[in-house]
Amino acid sequence: MTTRPLGAQISHMLKDRGVDVIFGIPGVHNQEMYRGIEEAGITHVLARHEQGAGFMADGYARATGKPGVAYVISGPGLCNIMTPMGQAYSDSVPMLVVSSCLDETAAQRGQLHQMKDQEGAARTVCDWSETARTAEASYQLIDRALIEMMTGVPSPKHIQVPIAQLESLAGPAPARADEWPNRPAAAPLQQMALIDRLNAAKRPIFIFGGGATRGVANWLPHFQRLNAASFTTYTGRGIIPDDAPFHFGANLARPGSADVIASADLVVAVGTRLSEVDLWRQHLGHTAPLVRIDLDPECLSDRHNADTRILADASAQLTACLSQLDGEKDTTWTQQEVAAMRKKWRAEIDSEGPGILSVVDRLKAALPADTMIYSDMTQFAYAAKEVYPMECPGHWHHPYGFGTLGYALPAAIGGCIGRQVGDTYGPTIAILGDYGFQYTVQELAVAVELALPLPIIIWDNGKLGEIEDSMVRAQIAPNAVVQRNPDFCKLAEAYGAAAVQPADLDAFAQAVRTALATSGPTIIHVKSDIALTSS
Ligand SMILES: Cc1ncc(C[n+]2csc(CCOP(=O)(O)OP(=O)(O)O)c2C)c(N)n1
Ligand SMILES: [Mg+2]
Image 1 (spheres, protein in one colour):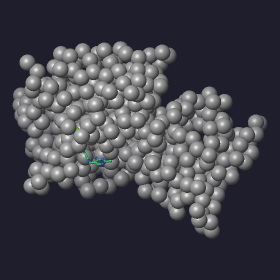
Image 2 (cartoon, protein in one colour):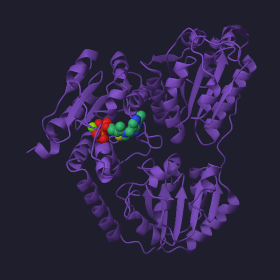
Image 3 (tube, protein in one colour):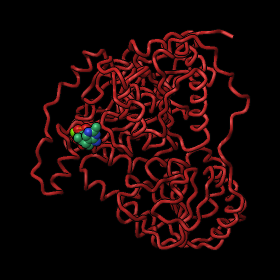
């Protein structure tokens, strides 16, 4: 039994529970948490701002499926990481934020890093935020957080430990239990109801969200025999092969998708909130019975008023159910109607952002199928995520729900770190707008420091393009939407990163391939008229 300050014991406990990387920034308040990191065998990644640390933890979690862990100081450190916590909460990303906190805040004002209610502030952007007043409470809360992340809907949690506690000697955390609980499996009774509905349906349609990503291979061959139509949400892209005959793609946000869904005689939504940022309208548009399969009871009781509500793990439920359907089903969907709708939608997207789709197509051709893409709130990404044919599920990450500018660079850094095997990294890229890039530009230093082979595509239209368009649509004379940019290539040079400004689409594709093979990050500065001016 090694006795250590509690701060050090926490790192040892996290290592024992499978945590290999912690993102964060030390300060005098949380330095006891830094006493044990190296000793425990954990790699620490020093961000340049706690917002960066939080997005790195998010990107790491989305790439690996493991919780992203961050250490921050009381007060401003915690405030700075609240935006990434809000992002992780809205997108169901497992993130554990451990911070210090003051020992006392009621009687004494003017203390360093003092906040009125730090625990409560953090609670507004995560699943729960608690203060661990003893070593035992710290250990219990950490295990509770990790077990909840593995068995339920993944989400961020915050644990704060008073400074005096972090400094106090404590015994080690109990060893990790041999068996950790699993996600709940299929719900057998409701399974029969779903099988009956599927057997009777002539025009079933499935909607797959990010919650259906795990274990796809177990049920996909059975699903294909159903001849059902499908959509995915943006997070669900890649679950169904993009060229499957009855797949309508990630086009739920197209208004015409409501008519397609209205023509179905059964709608099955799996692992999706069907939220505002999935649909961009209030109603799904269904006229037929709606079946929901989800781990999250909140989804089963929402405004869409499902007719059958199945609380279960998506993969377990689909595998158990679809494997019982025998033979190939006849449905009334035709390949022609699917192809015609997709062609129409692509033309709509093309006309909304002229000159974007040809760059997207070249990007797709230049990237290996298993590239993990992190995008920001930029017009390039809005168009790309509707049309980009994903081959692997769970490989495009975006600040969907909270919609935070500055997400993509640090998240891609976290993702790249998570995809390191020996000396190589799974291909990872970041895509940002010229304005959003500047929210977290300083994290470029981390990518340089770690020599991450990271292409960073900056889509430069010289303005806050999406906001200008939105003002025009609202008949507001555009204002506050044009900014003077730095010289992005010189900025990259100052940080020690490579940089290139491709003149045409061939040079762009080549720049992407070269950047993936280069040790260290490369800024690929793309003028938004590149396709329009290329010969
Ligand atoms: C933290 C934060 N502040 C403000 C916004 C609102 N917002 C959304 S897009 C955008 C402009 C982004 O400009 P840029 O990154 O250049 O992308 P573009 O739309 O021009 O492609 C702004 C200000 C936001 N999403 N997040
Ligand atoms: Mg812009």
